[in-house]
Length: 115
Image (cartoon, rainbow, N blue to C red; front, side, top):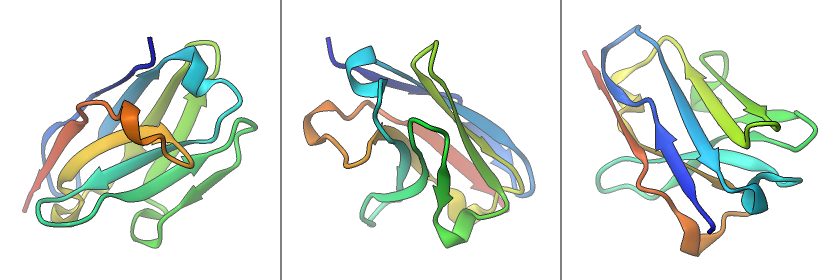
């Protein structure tokens, strides 16, 4: 079964940290570039961090230096370490492959950053 399960979100004060996890089905994870996306209310879903199967990473400018994406290929899991969180980071966070696969989105995990 193709599946993505995100976890680790929560409510945190500005400047705080959270670590998100995404457990993926092997069919999605293996040899695929994986990405974290986020969607704030009234806004389009956007990618924030990418990691290739070889470990090369890329970040959207707004999170550079604050977020770190990593993956554990043995566990089919991708992580997002988020530090120095800002209220603008408040969103539902999702993981997916890149290019994203539209019919397999998980439920996401809510991140709320209070000022």
